[in-house]
Length: 241
Image (cartoon, rainbow, N blue to C red; front, side, top):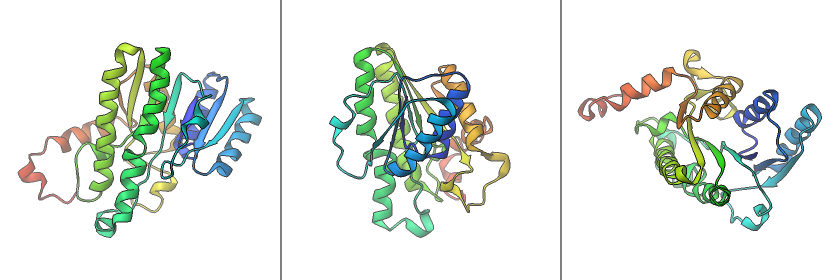
């Protein structure tokens, strides 16, 4: 399995969920910008599950030499690359913040996903699981820079799924909603709408095995976002969401 954003708590929980469920991988490739942290997780996986791992540096904000990944062969990719950044009040007109949000969540990530999608297409088999966000379902004033990046990613994944369908490669879009992770630490999250990394990992694993196209980690988010998407614009633009 290829894991992009391997230091994400959800990514690591998904890896462990797969191994606990009996999945076995010839090699588990952990790709991240912080390889020292990834090495610690790799050692944990090696000891606990006797799973061979390889840690590789991947920083989407730097120029990528794809030759470093030519040897990678896998039928399963899990991507948890993401960056929340500053919200609208603090960061709307901070262009560095905006560029970082767009680059990590969309513009610099898509070429990486394309690279591995092409590998799977050439073999005519594979599964790609990519974390997007409910924030991409409709732009809301609280976080619409982040939401717009995730909306772009969701649209890209929809098109990629359509393109790869007859090439025997399945693409699943995951929309987690609130999750209790380092990225959301300190935010006032509603516990009823918030999943732990382990809860998210299990939900994603089940959706992956069911070959779902789009999966909301907590089912309630599907209903919430359906309501938000269908609020008329003349009302929606007045709301504080």
